[in-house]
Length: 603
Image (cartoon, rainbow, N blue to C red; front, side, top):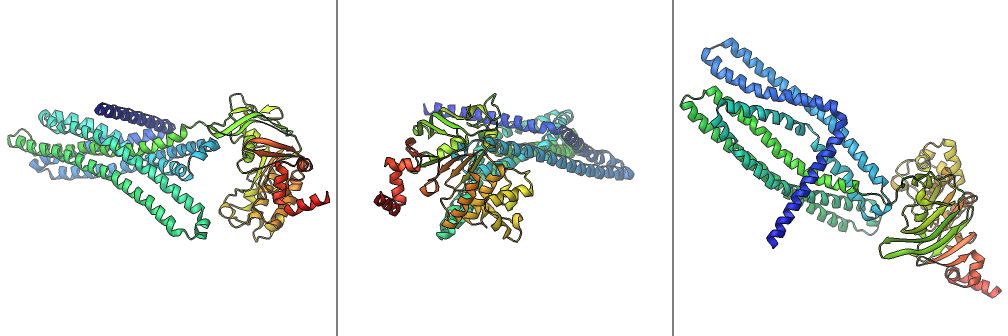
């Protein structure tokens, strides 16, 4: 029973392996099709190489069997010159084929990497929640680079090897069919050996690619969190963790290389078996005057050329398995269909007025763990709605759903009467601005970061946005002003300065809908005052959703929504909610105990 199950699993593995190889070859041919002109030129080079490789042994045979016995000295020099010229041409054609295939491979990899990168960017946040950054980086770089090996001069030389193989086998049978049969007797063993090692090499290199991704994950986590690591003096611990992954990577690479190292000598030994057979049988033929010395030397030269395609084929198998392991990882990403995407017939969202309605919405990040259930909420246009509540109550989730970073499982969300699923994602997000506690800045200049959402913005527009965001003063204090490089993730700026750049970015795009997600939670009092002054200019005339733990920042909101466990517990303005003496009042008293006591005494 176990033997049957094992046999079934092996058959399924082989079938999957063949499907992967066919899909990979088809995909690579699809990308190389546009380079057919260069491919034809490369093919011409390799055919010329085949012809020259077949010709040189014939010239050698001619010298030994005819020129030497006849003592034709001038013919010896002429034939020697022809061999040198053929060798020169062989080198030129090898260079040409290598250079041409480098051009083709780089264009193919360029297209494939861009296709993978563009598709990755199109995926929704659910995908990125489930996959680590280091792993995705490995797929976009190392795995794509591995496929370059398939489109190279070595791969195209297989065409030359096939032509050479057919021509030589025909010649060998023409010269001595018995010797030819003895020569080819090792081919079945070569095929069986190649088949035996094929799946094992692929499995080994799949493990190498997987551990490479984990190594990148570890590296990315360490470098992005270097300040925390140094703050806790955890360099030694991180070095030990990285050493563990490095050791696993070393072991996996050695294991894969061991298979390749075993495979190649076996192929070489089988080739030596064939050469020994030819040498012994050929010597016997010469002793019986059935072959000339020139013929046997040419025969041995052709046998060497015959073995070259076999060696190339064995190297190709290793490359195919390495590339197949990388291709599977690339296909895993390309096969992902984004959950949030434009449905067929989706329209561009007209300029919005800002009315947002949640109608019987249900949403969960994980099945069976709902965040919102039968949720109803209206955000009126040109008004500020604030969300307060405990951590995990669904505040940020509501913001994500409005921006359609996730799609609801049930119900609808409307903007000005348009269901979000009926409009294009781009037209929706282009009319929104998000200022969050975690400010994302790119490694570039202040000017680049302010203009990120509007790259075509003029210098005057950028300056005006910075002035409105109360950021112009600190920007111009830098020696290079707006052209100051801020470092990776804005490391050269304070928290308040980063936040003001984020607000300037929102000013520049002039969104009709603005989401403030804990925009001042991590700032000191002075920075918060700067931000509040900037927001007082940004909020009027827009529909604004404010998520806040500090109740002092939302007391002037037109509508305050108190959330608990995805449900609306209370709804009203600041004064109304205080009078209800419910959850909002309890939160208020926890944050302002002295003020609440004083207000109670006055009453």
